[in-house]
Every structure is written in structure tokens, then in C-alpha cells.
Length: 141
Image (cartoon, rainbow, N blue to C red):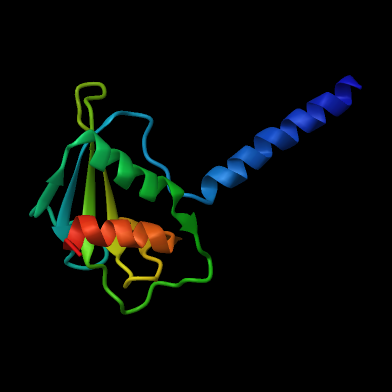
């Protein structure tokens, strides 16, 4: 019986590892702002911020969209360039302010959007509703 519980516990932990890889993740630190810039393409991040989001409700909305974007193995990076870069700024950790960079290919109304970590080719896809919300926030649609 004890051996069975150990195996069940191991499978539970293992399933948690797999599920966390299927969505984007952020650091376990407080997000203090998200800078949005016009992307210059894959690879680097444009630090010329057009919009700075630092209101908690808007931060929560964008963080939810990012953390619920699902990995999509069928999507390969193409010639379609990202429209936006997101620079996620965290509170101070060990004397530094860590950041995360993401590329965004924003979908049209009724479509999904694609997010990439800077320097990674793995695509993460949002829902159509999250695309609508991002379009309102980023494009003032």
C-alpha cells in the first residue's frame, strides 16, 4: 500500500511538471510593470516603450493572458514578424530588477494570438477572447 501511494504521488508530481510546461510562466516575483513596444522582429527586444502598464487591474489582465497561453507544437516560426514586444518588469530581487521579454503576434478579431519568449521558437497561443482583450489594450480597438 505504501509503495502504491509513493507511485501515485510521483505520478501526481510528474503530471504537474508536464502541465506547467504547456503554458507560459512568469517568475514568482511581483510584476510591477509591463512595457509595450513596437517589435523590431525576432531575437531582441525594442526598449523604446510606447505604453507602460502599471495599474494592477491591467497588469493582472495581461499576466492572466500570458500565463494561460498554451504551447502549440504545430506552429513553427514563419516569416510573420511580431508586432509587439512585452518587457515584464519585476520587483527587486537580490539587488536587481529582473525582466522577461516576450514577442506578440496579435491576431485579428475572432482569431488567436501567438506569444514567444524572446530567444525561443516555442509558440504559445491565446484564446480568441484574450486576443480581443489584447487588441483593446494594445491597439485601442
